[in-house]
Image (cartoon, rainbow, N blue to C red; front, side, top):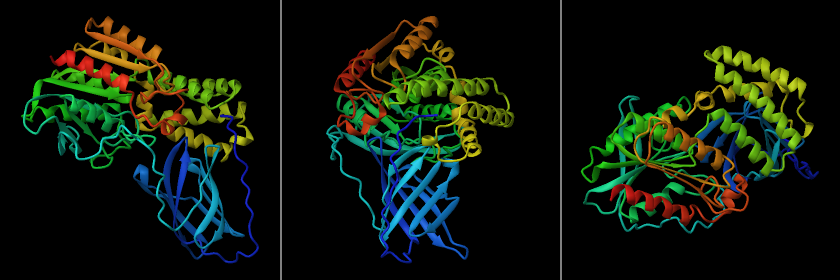
Length: 466
C-alpha cells in the first residue's frame, strides 16, 4: 500500500553480446537507506535451464532458494516471491551484470560481479581501536533452561578487582553483541565508554546469531529474556563482579526484556531502558509505520489505508489463540482488504495471492505474533528496582513521548518511586544527533551514540552504585 517512487529499469543491451555464461557465484552490494548490504547469487546450469540460490552474508543467511531463474536475450531474471524479491539484470560481459533488485515494490540498483566486493569505508570516530585501555575477555555461558550456549564479551576496567556491572541487551532483529546496525556498533561504543568509567560490561550475541547457539527464528521476547537472565546468573559466578551491583541496559526490544528479567531475578539491582516501550506492540508498529512512512514521503491517503488494514490485522492477532486458525483468518482478511484497496501498480512486485501469503507468513512468525500481543505495562508495574528510561524526541520507531509517559505511569502504579524519565532533544532511535529521525539517516551520520546521552546514562549509573 506504500506509494514509493520506483526508478524506471532500463537497459541498453549490446548486440555484440552472445551466449554469455551466467553460471557461478555473483557478488553485489545493495545500498539501502544509507546502509551497505552484501548480496550474492549462485547460479548453476540444469538440463532444463538454470537454478540458483541467494546469500545474504551480512545477515548470516545462506542458500535462500530462488524460485525461478530465467536468462533470455542476455537478461537475467531471478524471483523469490516469498520474500517479495525480484532481480532483473543485463549481462554486459562474463564478469558484469548491471541491474536492479526490487523488494516489496522498492527498486534498488544492484550490479553483480564474480569478484569479491568490498564495502565502502565509512567514518565511525567513536568506535574504539585496540589495544583497549582495559581488560576484555571472550566468554561463553549456559542458558540451562533452553540448553544452549551463548557467547559474548566481558569488559573489565582492570583484570583484577571487584566492579559493578551492566548487561547490554540488544533490540529486535538478528543482532550480534555490538548490536551492529546501519554500519554502526552502538553496544561497542557503550561498552567502551562504561568500562573506561569504572563499570564491567557484558554484551552477547543473540541466540542463533554469530557465536551464540540456539534457534533465532523460533524465539520470542520471552526466550530472549531467558537468555538475558542466563547472563545475570553467569555474572554471579565471576569474582570480579560486585554481586549487589548488577544492572541491565536494554535498547528497544531490550528495553522490554530488562523489566521482565528484573521482575524474575532479584539479583538485578537497577535497569536502564533505552528507547524502551510502554504500550502494546501492535500500537508501536502502527505508530512506527505511520511516522517512518511519512518521513519517506508516503502520501497521507496511503498511510491511512495502510493503518486501517494493519489495525484490523493486529486486532485479529491479539484475539487469536490458535496459530493455524490465525493463518486462515488472516488469509481471508488480507484477501478481502486488497480487493477493497487495490495495490498501486508502482508498488506491485508480485500477485495479490503471493502478497497475501507473504503478509500472513510474516505476521504469524513466533516473535512478531508475540510482540504484537505483548503489553509491557503489567510487567513494569512489578519492577521495584531503580529505573532510568530515556528516549530521543526524534525517535520514529519507538516514539518517546507516548512510551516514556506509559512507562512512568506503569512504574508509578506499581509504587516504584526510584524512577528517572528523560526525553532527550534531537536524538533518533539509535540515540544519534540527527535532523529528521528517519532510518535513512542512520548510516549517513558519523556519530554512533550521542555524548550527551552517554553522560546522562553514566551520571545515573554512578548514583546507583555509589
